[in-house]
Length: 483
Image (cartoon, rainbow, N blue to C red; front, side, top):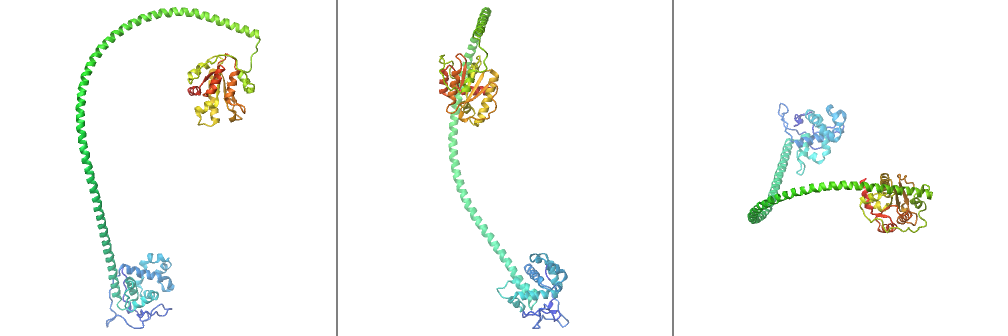
């Protein structure tokens, strides 16, 4: 907003602005005019002239200068509307108090002269030059116009007009420079676009050449496909003719098969009749054989009872393997003579079920050999627990004696109790589980079925020589997985 006020050269003579830059009595904060010069007046009194329109930079500079000197003025010399603004922080005083400061400068010439005295004192040589009505060529035109507006020397309007012209010239120069810069940028972008267009044109030419080459290849392939299609259609016609011929032959062969099937059904009926007669005869013969077998078993049972009574054998609390478990077979003996081998090595779980179905069978398991083959990713404790739990299930299903042997180097104390029917053994120091397994086999009586599960070839060969049935670890693992 423009600052307007009456021309202040017509103020009372005690408060004029000095034109030579000298500052008056500091106590009065006014400047004394030593030259007595003033703007021309008419005979009837001062002539009122309209206030010039201030450029925005000049108006902002005037407000900034006034805001800077507000705190330096005594409180009684500061107008009441500006006393609160004077207490603002420096960075807020000019920004928030600008409207009030501008209005007060326009309405209160005395306040403006007090501000002018402080501003000119701070401006130094530049303030003195402005008071004299001149301005250095190197001075900021905005600063000169602001000081001229406040001091109101002779020709101050011309200084403000010159400042406005300079500000507009700078703005025009900035606009021209911006237009030149934008034109240069557009020229640079245009040159870049032309370069990119040339590169793209080269790429498109190369792509066109490649597409033409591919088109030629596709045409050649199309001709080859058409030729292949014609050949395929000719072969299809021949195949259709051959298919019709083969269908006729198949129809004749089907008729022959039907006739042969009827003859076979007739022969099958005759065979079923003969089989019925044979089954009747076999049933009668089997009844006779069953009677003979029952009589033989009854005779053997009575003989066994008589033999047990004659030998006076008391019932036993321990099995042979229990003695080996107690003494760990300190005195290895020689196995009694027996068959060289009772079975061959196999990984078939059905073979394991067949052997465990024998009366009073004894299953001996090489513990770590089985666990490391089946679930070696677990810890040793988890391996032992999983194997012993599975063997407990087999013992409960079959009622057989089950013994699992682990190497003593990994023996753990405080193990949980083994399931019913399962014996858990650890080899002694200096003795391996293989040796303990062989001693368990040697301790069994001749004729008792002993099944040893281990994939160790040396163990299998050793127990086979003592009449046991060696089976691979996979047979037990499959049996456990099935259950």
